[in-house]
Image 1 (cartoon, helix red, strand yellow):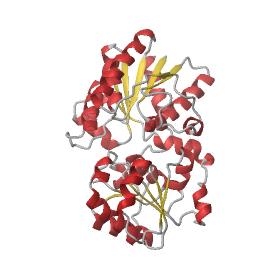
Image 2 (cartoon, one colour):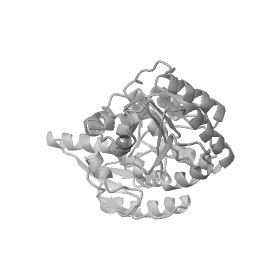
Image 3 (cartoon, one colour):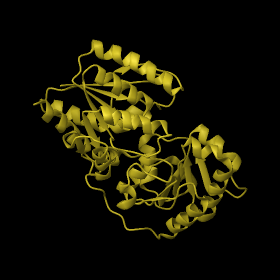
Image 4 (cartoon, helix red, strand yellow):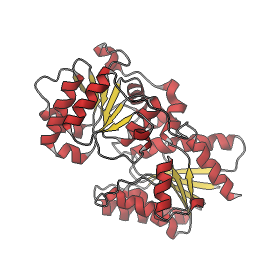
Length: 364
């Protein structure tokens, strides 16, 4: 079986790494398997830190499409053209795409036009806001896919409700958890904790990435004030990229000594930081999902989540962009008043094994 995995951005590599590991193990057992990793971007993409592939214990992509644009329509067109050329010269049985990027949608369209089996990882996720470009991408990709690999029962329900045949939908669990299971013993304690004399379990992690949240400066100022005030003497560690740092630094209150802004961390360091935190405040769905598995209290700065299991079963609480709700939830987090939580079904670190076995079973 010849499998092509397409990654469109850095987070995709974290989700495909477990599949590459599972494929490597299967080949070691004698399974006839050939897996190629294709990246839509450039080899010198600045968003891919040098340690990423070593941290994930995977080889760099086999193929770079060298697409370089910020315009979503241009990205879509370039990926379609270049990925079509790749497929025409490289026989492929299955293409696996992840999440909901423009590059993901482009690869999905080309795959189906070439008559190749299309599998979508993290299928059935919805915001139900059609004004979001990613929501359109999700609808297109799921509609085209022959195999929909979902993280939970709620995603299954969405896919089935929208017309996907039951035989196409497989609840394999959350593949992010595979990485935690595979790499937990390799996590690296960030130096910032030792430098500041901060003990494990005594700090809050804060991450920020959503452009809309950063653009609403007046409300963001209120939210930062609410977070810092509620945290009190509990230190806040904020690994932020340059864009986020530039957005929040001018908005910080005069008394923000407890907020420690640092640069982005590698996968192993950030995973340690998040898994040993007292709590997490984030706008990232991936971070919230990992927090549920690590059983770390988590506050998400959004009004919805693609994986409602993190709220219904896990440690996650949604506060939207409401400073008052953020203040209340952070106060509860600091005081140790948090809801009882558990692990969602099949979030056990074996999603990649299920995905690979499904592909192999369908080939027989």
